[in-house]
Image 1 (tube, rainbow over the protein chains, first blue to last red):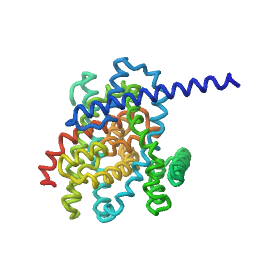
Image 2: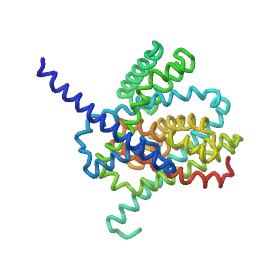
Image 3: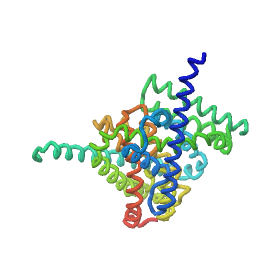
Image 4: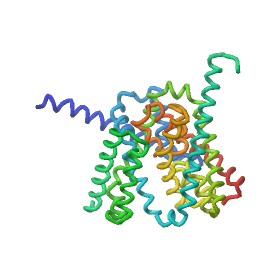
Amino acid sequence: MHLRLWPRALALADLLVGGALLIAAWALGEGVAALLPWAPLPGSLWGMLLAFAALEAGWLPEARIRRAASTLVRLLGLLFVPVGVGVVAYGELVAQHAAAIAVAIVAGSIVTLLASAAVAAAVAAATSRVRRGAPRS
Amino acid sequence: MSPAAVLALVVTLAVYALADRLDARVRRPWTNPVALTVAALIVVVGSGVIPLPAYREGTEPLVWALRPAVVALGWLMHRQRATLRRYAWPLLGGATFGGAVSLIVTPAIARALGADPTLQAALALKSVTSAVGVDLAQRVGADAALTVPLVILTGIVGAVIGPPLLRALRFREGPLGVAVGTNSHGIGTAALAGRESDAATALSGLAMATTAVASGLLAPLAFALLGLP
């Protein structure tokens, strides 16, 4: 019995240590956000960039947070559900302008998606041409 | 925790598990588990079966865990660093341009439909991830309370229509990830996690951050241009 329990306990410890490190990065991110009130990013996004930088610099060993981070990324969708349901609180406000909101958001999203995908694809094509050293056609 | 709050958490987890199972089996744009679960729970909470305060209380742990999960996207970026390095300029270009287009085109559409300036101003911020959106709304004189639901709806709409629309137009991986993150921030990124490649998901997370920064810089210009609010 204890032979089976032991790896599970290790996996749980791994998850908890990784989770604690991610929470620490979040806390640091909140600190940065508080120090730079004019910078338009919330603490969690600063934490994301700090975690990325720490991993790239080798200050944070990737294996230490792998289990926790991969679990959280897999659950990201679930974690956004309560935020989405929060729309209910604004039901009346949204219902008042339902048609304009629906059209503007759907059409605006289509235009935004296409504009950003087209520019990303065009820049990617241009940079790969430069990298290959081929003359511009 | 009140019984209704516990029920809220259990129902959220159960509906998500079911939606995820359905998505794994049929894999259609409309089976996006985030969108399906949100739609089902809007009905449950909107009809008062579970009151909103109880729903908020019960799902508090999920909202709390969202922040370390966003930090975990930094880990995904590290794992996908080869893609990010190759894609740095397309990402910067796509997210900045897409963000600028959203700031101008969305309120212009609303204006053409006869929406008042308050609504136009809030719609302009539709693609700015909500924490930044609220802050930005206050700085540029838009209504923060009106901005939040519009940001969330944009997240859901883009998560559902984005991938099939882009795929139909032959945009894949890189441009797809950049575009979904640019338009639909965290909700779009969450919808890509597990459904699209890790590279697309990591790019979407970075596009969300880039769009937030670009919008923070460009919103005052766009508002001046449109004469808002």
